[in-house]
Amino acid sequence: MSRVIAIALMYLVSISDTNSGQASACNLGPRLNCYCSFVESVGKYSVDCSGLRFDGGPIGTLEIVNPGGRDIYRITFRDSGVTDIVENAFDNMPNLFSLNLRDNQITAFPANAMRRLQLVEEIDLSYNYLTDIPNDTMDHMTSLRDFEAQGNRLTTIGSNAFIGQSSSLQEIDFKYNQLTGIPDAVKTLSALRILDMSYNTFSPSNLPSGIFNNMNALTSLDLQTTYILNIDPQAFVGLESSVDRIVVANNNLTTLERCTFEKLTALTTLWVDSNPFVCGCELAWLERFFASWPVWRQARCRPVSGGSEVNITDFVSQNCGGYQPPACP
Image (cartoon, rainbow, N blue to C red):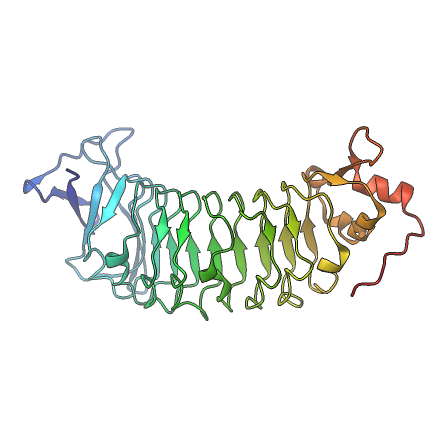
């Protein structure tokens, strides 16, 4: 059975095993950290307990005790072996602004504990073992701006998972998970500015028409390595005046239609490298983005007649002088 460890937020962390009632030994050594660092600013405390260990083992189930009633606005338990969080862990932290539980072993979304967080704006659950984010678990977090959950095992995001954040949530990072497309819960987030869905496996492997229609504030979209085969010409409707960065690198695209991107007037960065493009002058419109491609981001294409791949920049300059693209519908 996992031990429930009560962490008292004092300058020296007091660790007790609540199953036995005995204090756990904290043997200081090069790989053991028995202290939390504190930073105070105008009566508010930032607490960092990253790497906390006792008896050479992980924390297990986390319970946080704040007997002095300190105003904790930021708390970090990174790489501390946390597997679960008790329901009342954050009861004495009504003003908590930022919660970082990155690099732990949490297997289930800590819904009950999270319900205590009314004012939190930043949550980082990256690199845990989460498989889903259930419905209605964060509906009270109406101030949440940044949600990080990269590097988990997420397969399911409840359709109402972000129902309380439609006008507050600005950044979501879901990269390195097992999601099969843009979650329905994300499509309603009208304030979202940054969405990273890279390194997931989309199925079906296409971006359908109107998928971003309600995300009018989106400025950065990362779909790298999502195995996309096709982008519908109307996929980016709704992003015409907002999105300035799109990454569709390392997918299975053989061409990119100019008209799909023509109306994205704010777009300045488009990374398309590592796709199996077929050379053709219909790619000439990408010339407006050539200057923004770093050397390591140079996109290549394979000539129709066969042979080795060439840089799209070189193909266009050598073969597409005077080319007039067809009008967009």
